[in-house]
Length: 593
Image 1 (cartoon, helix red, strand yellow):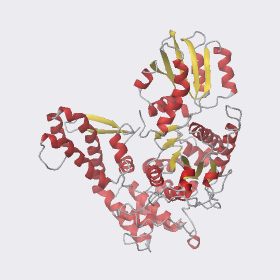
Image 2: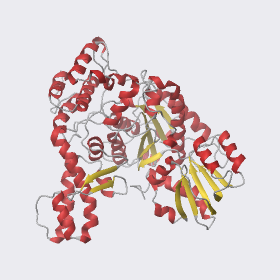
Image 3: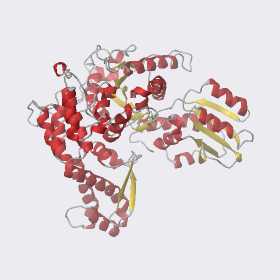
Image 4: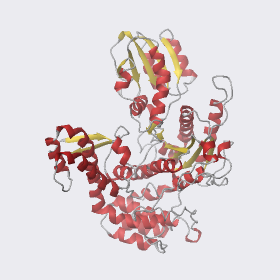
């Protein structure tokens, strides 16, 4: 299975699919074909393997959009998104001639009447089952989900796409409702109030109304009450620092510095062969290491290799990739264990190469600008003195842009004149959009020198800091801890709907203290905090969800967004915000992505 915990989102989704689609299949002993669109293909890949489907008498998995040979003696299961394109492809399978004996149709979400009526009109006699199973989100990890919609960023924040914004927020709201339904939660909804960021309030209203409609009547005819869950909605501009900083925890660092596409790490072995490894929750070593600091990862993997090789009286010495290659040839029985470790030894080495080359020097300046304090805890009085050495050093243009942004964020905006000088320094006169377009996210970039805004206070984490180059903590972690401790200010985080009783009052366990059982915990056991960030989440924010859950025990934190971003992908998205519709690729339906 593709999940790292027994109760992870991947497991929950697979159970839901088994309880609906697979249960219906079991009623018939014959083997069946499963037909998927691109979204449902990704969805199933995230939570099960082909062997799981085979054991449920599904013999072939096909692509809905590709031409297929008719198999008239077999029944077909269609698992698809309720879009016009999918329904047209389905109808084409039965008109004018049927390709299959019968069709069992399952939609990820609510199917509009017009599409449903079209299906009935042409294919009614072949359809045995037609159900909506309410899963239109993507489980990425045990506690992370996305709406698999990176294009939402342009639709919501580009001034040229305002006609698409309402529809995009509606779609995200529908997807969030299916997440809540899959988790069997009816949460209280809250949002971050900010005059520069109004999308969080809009989405909160949409989700709350759609949840009320969804839970108006359950199967027993009773109205479902609120469960012990909270859903917090916030915009990307709420914390612009976390997605721009160089992170030094393993997963965040790897996705920032190495070109990892579709969670696939490609590398060359010592004999020059092209290899690749999938970084997901099937790899238990990845799950164990992904949130650790690179210093710990670099120390732990060679130790693990030495433990494996100790039995073969391998001489002690530095563990390198070439040593490992020799060991693997000599010890076939250890090959499988070593292969797993080799991947991570190689990936960690790749990360450390980048770190040694330039990231290490950048990190000190970045941390001082982000935190506002130096390593000794002294206030950074003149951020420009911190920034200048970065601008004068031959770093890449992208790295300099990241440093300039951190400087501007540290001041909550700068003057037009100062910004022009910075842009000249970095030599990006023709690419100013990397910086200026942050205003579309509600982040102050140009302000008059007399009205620099005050930054909200942060939690004191000086006692938690282990590494000088990793002092910054994502703002969302403060929010998670405040929410769990019932310390969120209702003026800043208004309730869109009634708050579940379990979240009233105070006395929750701090996410930074050792866990102690209490009456409050007992009352809250099994409660969930769901965070949704409009505009993308970072790997460091994903890590925060696991850290707070681990520390609190009584509350599971789940985090999600339209997509997961890296510093490079976010800057690229920011840059094209000011481009007109003709200059940016067209945004297709989610199912075409």
